[in-house]
Length: 149
Image 1 (cartoon, rainbow, N blue to C red):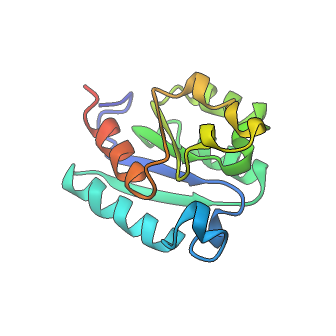
Image 2: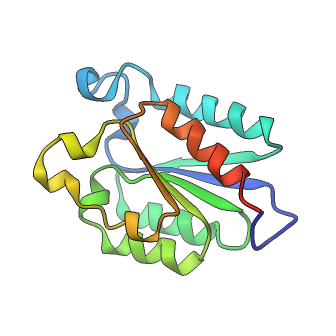
């Protein structure tokens, strides 16, 4: 499934402001909290024999450090970079550097929103992008990683 066959872990990365899910703009992001998303991702991963390490930060460098740390210990990354989607070449480069399969997730359909949200630095290094599916997108991302040969 990944470069390190004995690893059965995926890294779940959530970027800035996602710690406020459930409170922040529920008309856009829904009422599900980040803790609930992390729990559902862990449950879905378990059905595939995978474990999840989750990180959320409002600080770019902290996310990059977590991505680097996954290089030899994880089989893939599910990432919702939040606003860093549209601004961070550094996160894009970190994902490319670790050479793990990446699935990019967005709760809302970014293509139906403001023009500046239409560009993603991450999409170019992601194997798949799931946008607008709400919290279910995270579970589908896990399914995609689990289905990799």
